[in-house]
Length: 286
Image (cartoon, rainbow, N blue to C red; front, top):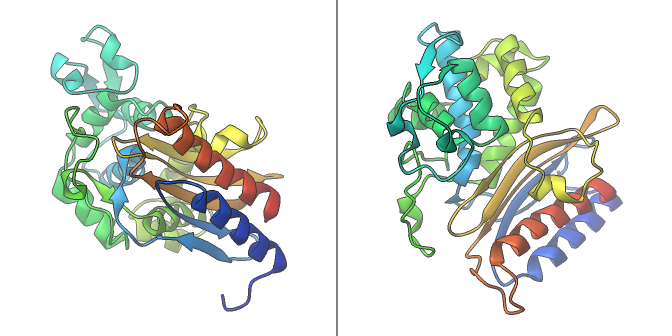
């Protein structure tokens, strides 16, 4: 939009101040769902996705379910190989042999960011399939490069060593998922039914990790989100509600975060706090 409301101008200034105070890179995009106004910073620049990639993995799997190529009811046995190179979630600490449905593996991938579950889901697809899905729905800056992220990556690894995305891509995806709740055409753009679109939003609302966007908002705030932790930074993308209605969509990515800040704090805590402050400024300012 060419003209911004006074609230948006003040919020944009507050967000810039938060970002400018950090020595590391902060990229973000926020869409005000009340006015349609957008505030962004480096939103089209590719950045490590970490586990925010799992939103598009879920959507590609749901498309395959819609097309009949996969089924929610498919049974998957947890094998030792599923836990190899896995550094997140709870199933890696449990005894192999348990059986999950594909539906439950998707739930574990999103609600707990469990990478055993991610492995189970993603191996029913291909890297090419998920990357093509992202390209087809307009996520031109999102490129999937592995099933499970390598544990041994250096802290300063190159960008092309990991799956990448953009803040703009993630806001667009979340906005389309939201629209698909009531708009059959939006659901069709995602390659899903409206029922499957509703499942996707339900899973994102069920995410239990309360850092990043969640950290400075009232405890009972409804948030449909997926966070991530990478070697170079922390990230989060979500829809924030107020009074039962979407208030804003925020995708925020920190990059080049030091392992230790000058004051001795771990860099990742400052990165997560920065995302929390961005969300708080949006929540109180828009």
